[in-house]
Image (cartoon, rainbow, N blue to C red; front, side, top):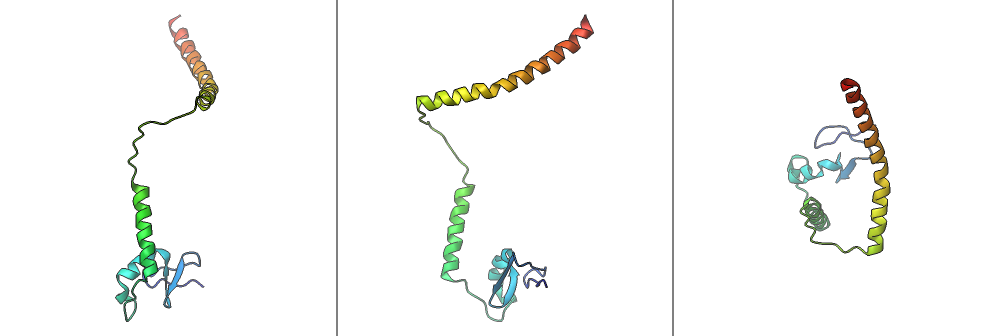
Length: 116
């Protein structure tokens, strides 16, 4: 039997359900519960130090993930690795040239039949 989240009022599943001091809620409703805990219990529940530390770590990780300013100044690549890369690049370009040749031949055939 599904339980009802006391924060949002929707049914929960065993995957996203959490129980804090006998109050059933979704994992994503915990922040709302902690901000407005006086609505759901008689006495407000304070976050523990471990939870506060975890929140700080998540904020730091979120900041690192969302910081997308990357500036590449230079990179050093050994000569042998560069030769391998260029050979792979040349081999990978062969199918592209075949496809472009076929498309070009079709275009020449269409325009050739129109003008000659």
